[in-house]
Amino acid sequence: MARALAYSAIMSNIVLNRPDLPPEIARRRTFAIISHPDAGKTTLTEKFLLFGGAIQMAGQVRAKGEARRTRSDFMQMEKDRGISVSASAMSFEFGRFRFNLVDTPGHSDFSEDTYRTLTAVDAAIMVIDGAKGVESQTRKLFEVCRLRDLPILTFCNKMDRESRDTFDIIDEIQENLAIDVTPASWPIGMGVDFLGCYDLLHDRLELMDRADRNKVAETIVLNGLEDPRMADHIPAHQLAKLREEIEMARALLPAFNPQSVLEGHMTPIWFGSAINSFGVKELMDGMAKYGPEPQPQRAEREIAPEETAVTGFVFKVQANMDPKHRDRVAFVRLASGHFERGMKLLHVRSKKQMAVSNPVLFLAADRELAEEAWAGDIIGIPNHGQLRIGDALTEGEALRFTGIPSFAPELLQTVRAGDPMKAKHLEKALTQFAEEGAAKVFKPFFGAGFIVGVVGQLQFEVLASRIELEYGLPVRFESSQFTSARWVSGSKDAVEAFSLANKQHIAHDSDGDVVFLTRLQWDIDRVVRDYPEIRLTATKEMM
Ligand code: G4P
Image 1 (cartoon, rainbow, N blue to C red):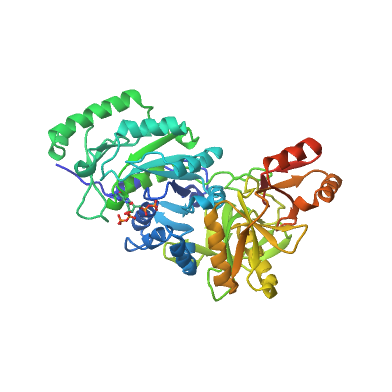
Image 2 (image 1 turned 30 degrees about the vertical axis):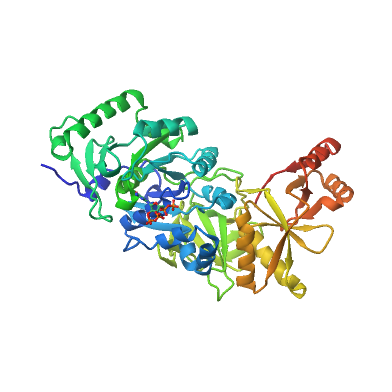
């Protein structure tokens, strides 16, 4: 007889990894989902929120995912920033756990933003399409996670469609990404024959319900693979194949090792179908059980989550969330402590106290005032531009977080206001985008205009539309003689002498730092050769 397991029963067996932490911290899981566009990130997010009780109906997040696909839809989304912003960081309860899901921008043009987002999480879920395997964007994002040794759980999606052979997929991940892969579940059939999965971690059978896409799968508890009840649910030919495959998998693939997962050397893989809500709960369960609690954060000294003083850093700034008010929301990852609304925090860069009286927490379709938050949480702080990416907030310590980089742009263009009388407005708009991290803005030593640097062409179009929409100012982006930029460092005298001798290449970024604009690699080689006391860098730490 099949017996469905009540979900609460599964959850109550879960032990926290670090019982020594304050329980409110130990129960938090802060993570991002990484994937190549179309693999199913939006669908999976939606199902997470559905099971987390944060949304009532599937479909609320979808509008946003679809909006990503074209520029005009993107702009529509920008107009309707309420939705896009609330989805930038979403918090919901899952059993005894609090999940903070931080959204990574989907388009490859926004990779810098994505990189910074990944500095705010403790783990990632990598979604791959079962038919396509590891794709280019998956690989890039994976590499970023690897730089930070983030634990990664893998979800192989769309098993209800014709997919690749299970061993093939696992081999591809192992070889392509150089990480051990251990199956947490094993798919039974694929495409129209896909029945569900055998849960290797709990020796249970999970059957997919194709009739109701929002229903959690039926779970049948068995006494291992040889349990005769398997035959009640799986046709003989599929059962023989399943037993054979699992035997091979157990012999050939590395066994599940929770410590290795936490260290980022091994990724467990679950198979499922997000659109059918299948495999999603097991994945969430995996994140709760094997995912890391809030981790120490990198600063001049390491900050442990259990420290009682509140500290946090800004990893993202989003402006004009409400078109009626020019407010900005700074997204802050709390690194330590227990934050309470109304607290006064030191804004380390300006050395000023800030009363944080209206912090927001983002639930799926809403934002609400955060009365309190703990290490690991993401809170949004509305402000008028004081808070910038990389800024630290503390209870008094002059702390500087590290590891939040700014990358040299890969495309440069000059920008002009359609109406020359409105040059000041243009400057204001560009300053705002620079502070948001949406573009690099350089003021050349010679000439009156600005040079804007981005990572992908689409960003120029989005910026032009936003300047027109938010500032009523038509602008033109034109090609620039320069193709790249490098930050200049060295002693004050050396930088000054270098700047004077190379004025036609020199500009200042929005923080006033000196930048060398280049046309060819030759320009950089020349500086390296002729100015040994000068260092040119393609990244700059933001603070
Ligand atoms: P993304 O955010 O990673 O870009 O992916 P998204 O969730 O938007 O999913 C991309 C497409 O894949 C969507 O189809 C979605 O319905 C589909 N999809 C997601 N999960 C599954 C799954 O488990 N099985 C199958 N068969 N499809 C899945 P679309 O073409 O954009 O729209 P639709 O016309 O199919 O609804």
